[in-house]
Amino acid sequence: MDVELRHLRAFEVLAQELNFTRAAARLHLTQQALSAQVRDLERRVGAPLFDRTTRSVALTEAGRTLLRHTPGILLSVGQALAETRAAAAGGERLGLTVGMRGVSGLDLVTDVVRSFRSAHPEVDVALRNVDFKDASTGLASGETDVALAWLPAPDGLAVVPLLEDQRLAVLPADHPLAAEAEVGAADLADEPFVWIDEMDARVRDYWTLADYRVGRPARVGARISGFEDSWAAVRAGLAVAASPALMLTRLPDGLVTRPVRGLGPAVLAVCWRATDTRPLVAAFVESARAAASGGSGGGDGGRGA
Image (cartoon, rainbow, N blue to C red; front, side, top):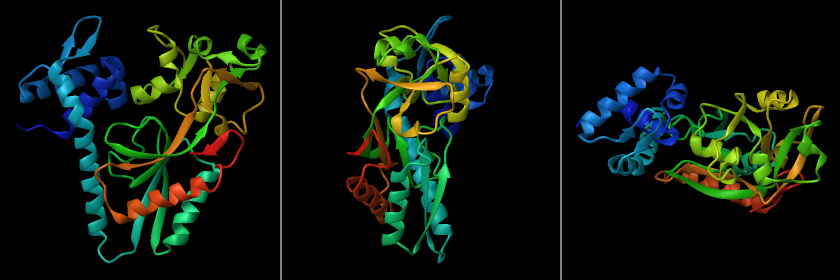
């Protein structure tokens, strides 16, 4: 059986989205090309992976079985690529690439990197900001060795929580909910949200409060690509957002934040491939743990875990 990585990536994204239009957009494919890849994978596996109707897409039992293994397979390939690049470096200085997703500017990130560099001055550290659409923060592709990112994380990653931070509602100043001292999670979940099509579905559900919609579909207020786009959309009255308080210290005029009643905290974690046992990775994780235990991470609303 000759299954290619492109088949598994397409399968994983479609299994997350259960929608050909959204999955094709995330993969930068046409729907016809995505359908062809899925059919090709099903032919090679010898079993249907999805039940398709004109209105819905659902995983079959065979599909659910394959999905349990797919994240680990892709992450193992990412680790192999990372180790191959390290081996190709030969006698050059040791290097570690740290992925960051939605954490730029946090004091804790600076503390973690400084702590690691102080303990391991022989290591070249590279920092890489990763798009929100990559929930693995570069780990699945092997572009990063460790990552600092807000949870949830995809399957196949090991994580150590570093701090918890209050999730706040971000609203236009003239929004009806802005008149309240705090808003209910279910009330906020019913509002139109900023939306990133390419984002991992599980991560997007978390930040758009899917657990509080009780089966109701999300309302898409504005499709965006990052923080700056989201604040512009909220300020224009197109949508609302939920965000860690630590990321809201420099909001533009015209936006307000409110506590959300009944909403659990955001969790910032250090992440790595669960199969990656390299001492350098373990050393960075320990530096992150130590830095988090020694301070809050730089702002009201965040505390070490």
